[in-house]
Image 1: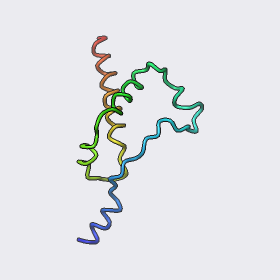
Image 2: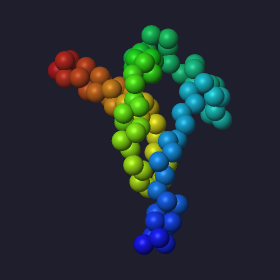
Image 3: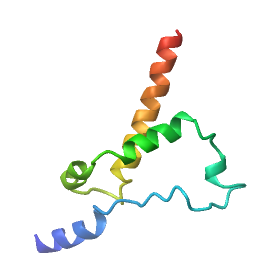
Length: 91
């Protein structure tokens, strides 16, 4: 059992992958210039950054490789939902 737990601890990570939105990347240009200041994605990130995601972080027990940060996943979820909802309204 101890061997299994030792292997499991090495394979399962509960440390979230850091998100660096202001770091320059190798692609042409920098990410800050990709979106206009009034873009929905920027609005969603601004709102999600104000949320308290500590309960999600505490509840996460790990599994597989390092996960993405809960706030990043929430921002992605909210952004996709907003896009979907706007398409439904247009129809």
